Image (cartoon, rainbow, N blue to C red; front, top):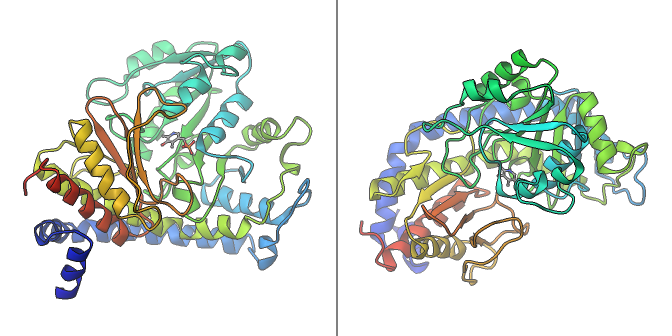
Length: 427
Ligand SMILES: *Cc1c(COP(=O)(O)O)cnc(C)c1O
């Protein structure tokens, strides 16, 4: 379209970059259709849960103070439990983010003398302090919870032999991270996670399994809770918040685990009875309602990015053609300079703070300097178009989000333009 091309030029995207993008897009139509099918299924799943639980306008009423008998909050938790096919759920603004939700789930279900096992290598950066891999006040280690880890094999698969050897009589909880996080290992499919859970439970039937589901929600038609996870945990500032939730985290799981989580989150004896919704219910319900399509858009953006960058010689994880199990796209750019250029493009395409320039800086919970590009309606939201990465080899930028596929597309084209402008790639 002539007019569109003209407009792209006014925002600094050249005809060469635009046309290069269009060629990639042409190749992707069939894949995008398959993503829409999954989104349709998940949309129906969320809708059915809302209808079954009689979501009504009364659910959107604000509560304050203690929040006793908060029917909007309690019903939202039933909706989540139904979508994840679990006995119970804890979903509320008092869970401040994904790290907090995971911390609650771990510390509620691990006691002094217990051992925590990660059979999938090093957990996400922020959890390293939670567990005490990096010594930190109030870590699980400080409370006498031991930690053991089995790394993945060189090809990114599970080291079943070593996992069998690592499970012992103290092993109380096994934590499995679905998404690659800031690593360049593959993200696991829900089916793979199910196989790992079955293997662990065969060795030790009463072991609890928690899955860090961050960035994975609604990418497939099943979730880790469908394949045996006792707790499935994530952030509302990512996929299930649908871009509308301004805060929150969720834990879906067995009644026993969730009860303990509620006691840990508030206080023993109080549990889920307290926790006012502060008027956030409309955003949390509506965000969850939109999440399947928002996730589909973000996934298309990730695939588009891989199909632009891989042919230019940058290693992409996942690669341009393989199947996807989260919305993260890692692009190994090979230098700090390229990371900065890429992020500048994402920032320039943002609806908020597009005039800002991202620069690498220190971040709490992270080991090396981190660069972040995000101009989001919800601060730091990574279901909105964003890119970030630690400044360390292989200088991978982690691209994710986009509330709409079209916005993701504009952002990726902008990133490529900045790379071209800086002389870092030639089309
Ligand atoms: C983002 C993320 C977390 C932490 O969630 P926050 O909301 O940023 O605290 C944990 N694990 C994984 C895999 C993540 O991607």
